[in-house]
Image 1 (cartoon, rainbow, N blue to C red):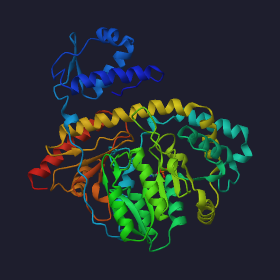
Image 2 (cartoon, rainbow, N blue to C red):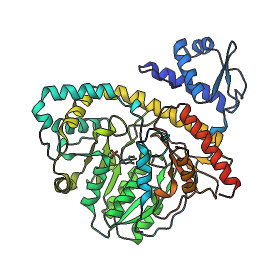
Image 3 (tube, helix red, strand yellow):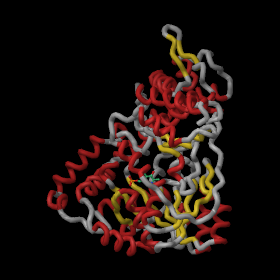
Image 4 (tube, rainbow, N blue to C red):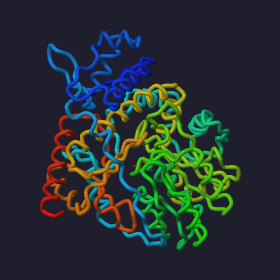
Length: 486
Ligand SMILES: Cc1ncc(COP(=O)(O)O)c(C=O)c1O
């Protein structure tokens, strides 16, 4: 069963109902087994329609907070409450030593199963296409192709389609930023935006500071480009530790910092805005460029979109990278970088490596963004991701053994799970893959090979029985491993 949340302004009231009931349970006013207020009573009390309460109750059932008893009403689930108690993973101290990064077949393994429909997709951070606005995007594609058929199949050279760059720049207005569309360079996904940015600001042998744990493709880029990574301790809630970064800047010649400040991958951390400001100030005084990856910024669960580092950048030292891969259409490969003083370098690298980019997806994306459908879609998408993350967190807390710690992200759609010491995540992955369940082992997120007892879990798919069975089975596998000594 999948919960479909209301799409309209009813969504706000729906969230209110969910929040109200959760509070009753979290505070212990309602205990497991207690009867929840009836639909009618809550509708009267909160002044919302019965159908809104009914939809919210369906979501609360999905989350495992409520349970329905036929002919009798809604009751608090017997296990409700435990996930709120589940602690978040601890910050792991990493040694601040620049390292060569070495990764092998693990990448192949994770990505080769990502497209296999037989495998339960808890590994790669991939959203279900079910959640993507397939019809809207295809309509926009048809409109764009019909309007300019010759442009649709012609070359489009860097910096990319002008209408699309304008639409992307316009989206930053809400963050109080005035971005010149000429400063936006369209790339093939956020991956290429990160690669072009790193190529523009570093040379072989340079040291790059990254979060620890960090998105593994950044480590892979660092490896392939002959750079060195210095890992900076990062907190599962607030992200990169700025004191540690400051210490690293004092002792080594760091040439760039790469960070996901909004809902990092894998931690899910959100750096508070005042710390973003401090980060930018710190880097400005050292003259170090920041490559900020904001791919998850639109996927916040709270009321407000978090700021980006660029909001505090007075010297043009921030390169902002992002894409529509987690929100609209991963396969259209539309990403971008706002590169300021490195604009020309980024364009030269782009021209040198891929010359031009596909025209029709850019035209379609510009049309889709202009149509205004994106904002409405985002409201639904954020709610879906939030429910999926909460449900997964709840179910993992229920099925993994005591001592497990689970991140509690306020956006995005991945969870970072610390299992009891001694559980080897690589061994768990091997056992899980034999049962067609994928996962990403923690060691992939660090060049230090730390995080051996951690896994990242993808919550990009609507909850269903297959995922439920996979989580139950994972719990059994971890328990078996714990009994046999890891
Ligand atoms: C933090 C982060 N950056 C970049 C990417 C890559 O994005 P794209 O598919 O647009 O290349 C991902 C994908 O998982 C990601 O998690």
